[in-house]
Structures are given as structure tokens and as C-alpha cells.
Length: 111
Length: 116
Image (cartoon, rainbow over all chains, first blue to last red; front, side, top):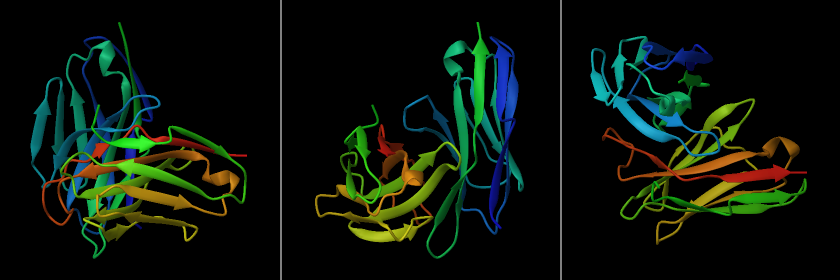
């Protein structure tokens, strides 16, 4: 069964304390892996799309990487405004493409 | 502001009823996606339309249906509502067809549905 697992469920960091969020997947093929940020009560905000193992993308304090089995979202020197839930999702290459989301990591950055 | 609009913002109804949620995509976007987000199931992909045609189907119940109109807005119809249908329903749009092309999805603010 296709599955996406994110860890940890929740992460509390001090401002400036770098860390990584994990998204592991067991799927029957991968067209793309997406990272989103979601603030409470709002719609997800797109961050990155990764397509192949070894690919990396960066945006401000965030860097996403992809291997054959997992993706990492690295957060460097985070600020309180980086507090949010981070979601990953995979796009599967079935005849009718199917998108599966992980349950998310709730990130809290203390000043 | 993503440029995707959804109405209504909140909806309270009773079990057994039918409701319609509306989504207007960003200007120029041809694809519309519908998602359901509940506390116990997380964010689930329901269905995608591209330029008026159904393109992909996820975990959408038979009681739910959707369509995309010629002006590209989309409606999600939920019928015979149950308590478990209470959730946030998001619409997203993108300019791609979702068929191998790079795809950035822009999410709307959501419609919060409460079934009593």
C-alpha cells in the first residue's frame, strides 16, 4: 500500500537552532514530492517540488532534499515566523494521478 | 493571498442535507483540485479537473461529486451528509495538467463545514 510518513509529529526548537524534518515514502512509483507549509486555519502554501533522487531546492532558511526512500526539509537558523505545520505529499504515476499527503510535522520556534 | 477564492467560508448544516462548495481558480489556471482535511485523516486528495474534464480521482466518496464549468470555476457537491463529513475543504489551482509537467498548486482559504 502506498504510504507517506512524516516525523517527528511535533518539534520545538529554540530560535536559531537548526534541524531537519523527515518524509519517508513507500510508493509504487514517484512522479514528484511536494513540501507545503500550513498555518492554523489556512490553506497549505507551496514550498518545493522535487522529482528525482539527489535533487535539492532552497528557499530562504529552507532546503529540501530527496532520496529514493525519503525527503528531508532542513531548516537553518529558524525564526519564530517559521512556526507552522509542514506537510509533504507524493504524486503517483498511476493512470489517474493520485496525491497522498503525510500527516505533517508541527514546528514551533521559541524566541 | 493565493488568488484562489472559495465560498462560503463557513457552512453549518444537518445530517442528510446537501451542500455546494464553490471555488474560483487563479486567473489563467486550468486545473482545480479538491481536498478534504479532517483532524483524524489529515489532508486527502479528492478529485482534479483540468479545463472542464475530470483528470484524476482520489478518495472521493460516491455521495460527493464535482464539476468544472466553462469559466473554470468549480463546485464540489456533498450530499446525504454525515457527521464524519465535517472538515475543512480546500480547493487548489495550478496552470499545469498534472501530467508530467512541473506543478505548483495554490490553495484557497478553505470552507469549514460542520454537520450537526
